[in-house]
Length: 587
Image (tube, rainbow, N blue to C red; front, side, top):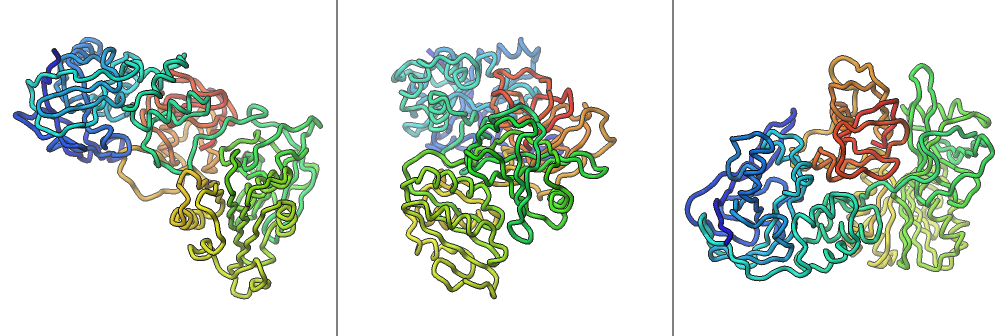
């Protein structure tokens, strides 16, 4: 019979790590006597990052004596004491290869249910001083597992662990962990996993995406985490950059011009999905090549690509495009990419934009008009005034081709003309004005514009009843960071890394609009990005969870630590890779 050897608890604390502060509850220590276990926690315990740990489905973490013995020999360590793997219960028995998701156990007065393996997390490596520990736990099939509390009660070291009920499908913790994080998945096993009611929602969603062959979010997260952000879609077309010819340049407003591009060699261009963007690389003076990304504003079926560029006051490339670029010039362009795309559904559609944010939504509107989509469509656009209202006649014509379209234009300038005509309003969208438009709660909404505009509209729409997963936003700059447990610090503008300049290949971070030479002192592309204060997204930092997956727009890399599973073609895990040539990253 299995036995509870130790009950370990610890309150979250701030721990210094790599120049940052991490708020974590990974430091656990054994306690004596009985402890009350409640639905969310053990008496005296806590988690620092509730997005990745804790909560009802992850109330208690379990690790085994046999795994401690294994790691003592494998790592050559004699200092591993109970609680060092962040577990609440250290047990004798219950190996990961035999315990199954959905198994129920009685320990002392309480009853528990197995819900999922441990989430891969860099903090176990912090605690042990072994940076690759998250990957080792998966590769060696010794992750440990979480319990949900079915019946609250007291437990203490020495209690017997009694199996009450076996889980359906009898899928072990080790097999479940491998099913998510390792290659060569068994489709039948995926279906079995989805049949287990006890499996936590985050893992179930990841398995559902794998079963449906959609790009998954590899690190399971609670429903609602990071709404509106998704992994970048696989780019179609060509690798790296190719030369394209400027066919013509058309002014749209005093500050916006559209650039029409076609293939320099006359070959047909691959189609793009409505809402995707192009990354353009152009040498500007002595500064060398500058890379910027611009949404496609043309129809997905067009024989050309059209990007529409706003001249920013201090924009290096936008200034060059407006002042210097001419028809016939050649520019380097990466193939269309991006996951802010018009999705297939039968639901009503809201396309809401401000200023230059109209560009990806205009491509979506072209697609809807080309197919005369019967769904209700709301086109909501905010501009300063008529002179600064780009694509006004084009959008009005496209909306006229739809059987069920509504157009709402808002001008913010106090002296704006036409603001009192039907369909035109003075001011910015408000919760009240959106409510008056009659937008249904089951609509899909696509928003693009300044961050404040998108944040405000997202809030208004959620208040109106739209669910967060149906509100999609496009952010032209860096994606929101995912740095679990790291204490928030004031935002810093990306900059050259401190210390001597590197002598290796040039690394360009396209979304952050900066380039810097590589230096091995940074260990990985993720380390270089962090040294430049570029927003990054990661969880395990060891090539397991794929949270850091990034489009490799150009160049070649080598993995400093081989990932347990390689990412999709055209992408790279920046947490464990370094450049072998000049590279451009979608960061």
